[in-house]
Length: 234
Ligand code: ADP
Ligand code: ZN
Image (cartoon, rainbow, N blue to C red):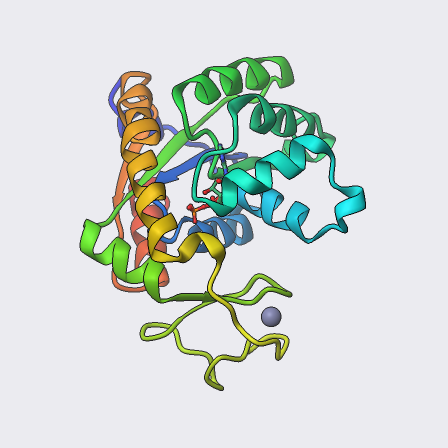
């Protein structure tokens, strides 16, 4: 069955289970928020899970989490076994009857295989894998200019999405920072890792007939509109 014909018979009020794929910096996180609002699904962003763990007092960090944080700071992937264990635990959750949106997971073929087992066990059918595409120059621009609020997680850009007061979070007034992994050296590592380990998932899900490509627009709203069109919901 082709990507699109599978969606043609979508009943209204359907529960959606999605994966979002795409290089760092394409804006998956923002799309994840918009999709979650629209569909009421449960969102699981593994990057957020690790950033939240990093804020815990060191005494509460398990050895696996400490190790994960050190990989993350350098821009490297956290080992599959650690990520899969976290996702397995989080997906064992009654709330998932509302639907599921995975952002940042899976990121390797072994993670995708582990996910397929977990979804079978939890009886969750995967509907679509949205693959967000953006030229590399724009990816570099977005990541290098991104500034993040260390307190509430809100994200800004020095050119494209400036806060009302320079360097200060609109939502909570905290001073914005550049994420460790948005520094040039870590960006290089992340993009290389994406090409080597994550990009093969595009073909992996295409073969399964689940892949839907979305070209990123100029604004998050434009990209969201394209997403709904690609899902035949607009
Ligand atoms: P990005 O902005 O690069 O898309 P995320 O916010 O999704 O990044 O994740 C930040 C970091 O957390 C990654 O660079 C990686 O170190 C770690 N991480 C998140 N998800 C995974 C995963 N599925 N497998 C391995 N590492 C992960
Ligand atoms: Zn804030």
